[in-house]
Amino acid sequence: MKIAVCIKQVPTREWQPRLNDQKTWIREADVSYEMNEPDAYALEEALRLREKHGGEVVVCSAGPARVQTVIREALARGADRAIHVEHDSLGAADAFVIADALAAAMKDEKFDLVLTGLQSDDQGHGQTGVILAERLGIPSSTIIMDVQVDGSNLRVKRELEGGWFQWIAMPLPALLTIQSGINQLRYATLKGIMAAKKKEIRKAALPDGIVPAQQIVGLALPSKSKQTQMITGSPADASRELVRKLREDARAL
Amino acid sequence: MILVIAEQREGSLNRASWEAVAAAQALAGGMPVKIAVLGASTAAAAQELATADVAEVLTVEHAALQQYTPDAYAAACRTLIDQVSPAYVVFAHTYQTRDFAPLLAARLGKPLITDITGIQGAGADAAFVRPMFQGKLAAQVKPQGGPPALVTMQIGAFRADAARKGGGAPVNNVDVSIDAAAIRQKPEAPFREAKQAVDLGQAERIVAIGRGIKSQENIPLAEKLAQAMNAEIAASRPICDNGWLPMERQVGSSGQTVAPKLYVALGISGAIQHLVGMKGARTIVAINKDAEAPIFEVADYGIVGDLFELVPALIAELEKT
Image (tube, rainbow over all chains, first blue to last red; front, top):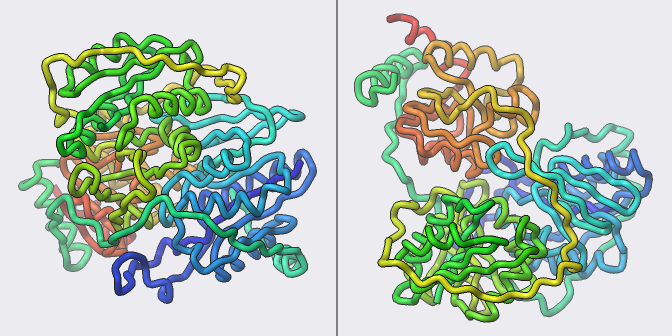
């Protein structure tokens, strides 16, 4: 089975946001990056499917030169090769642009299965996977918690709200967006890191004529919906004050 | 005009559809609002929706819409949109919307702005506010490329009871043809994994833990605090993903939605998927080492500090009396 995994490089969870001068995007110079967490689960699922059914796992990413770091990491975890659509503008691109960029580079590969995380921890549109499926002309299903492959048939467990699930069958090729927690992640071994250095990364150019579907006109710290009382002092003092407020003011204890 | 796509399952309307109606009314700026409901049998849901202050309720009935599939819903919505030419199509940001709205947008070649928490201005020039970077920033975005723009409203961002009611909107049917052979997904019946032993929705107090708890060995510390507060223990998604607490203890969009008297968030950064599940709590306490964590935006009381120092101090304080 030929499996593609689309991964994105996003700012780390610890990153503190700072804005550019126009306040329309973040100051990228300050950012440290990591693999988008839901995509890491998609990669792990792809590696497990390859172990079970054979074939290859190809990592696909659209972004500036910096995304090579997460591509190498995915190769070190066990992916066989990679496709990198490289352009500086892709770091801040919307879901349509990323999907179009990936589709152009992936179309001729004829993947049996395409996996990606259900959304990114940066812009969080939650659309790229489904748009990519449509561009590749294959069916999709989202927020997936289990993947079963039997020949050319696929059966997946889709998460619904509030603890409900649903099994859905569809033919291959198909695209799935993977929910975090579907599996336990593996980490790269030293051997994997060494092997990754020799694996192929095919560079693809960003096709002309791709237009964004939305524009960020402003970016700001979120406005507070509540007046938060911050309690300071030593742990003992802060605890005493908090318990007093919860008992006397909020009457919550 | 503005078209709201309501969501129903087996005749009962998803409550978030009323939030979408409220958002559409706020967005309208003088434009008429219409609501469409899709399914094999939509009369009951349409009757309920007709109580809204809207120009018309449209029923889109087809046997292929009996069970939800992204292919059938995208096909039906596309035909509907072609017929009524809306400026905006408004959805609640449910899991179902997340499944088919991007497909619809791709087929229409039109923008989709998701997870909206606020609307600035109204009508054709409106801008939409949505979280980015896990809620650390709020972006103001505008759709590009002309109408219609598809917009999805974050659950809980607009109040269902803010939807204006009217004198009974006319209900009319819209015919759509759906090619059953073009529906690629074959769904089975929805099910629940196991019966929920704990109903966090009924809990008076909840102590919830997030990534800041660091390891499974530290969970008894949080449990001890829960006990001292006479609270249920709960967690954000990553904790349940790791198997440190059972899935039934998860609060958030994929877990339970809770509204206790007291919610204590320990080491929870406050990703939006968690906030939608707990921001209805009456009093929220946040304890986090990161002063910039989004959880503080919804907290009534906040302490920036090390939970491994604060939680034992809190337990000691609670046990004093």
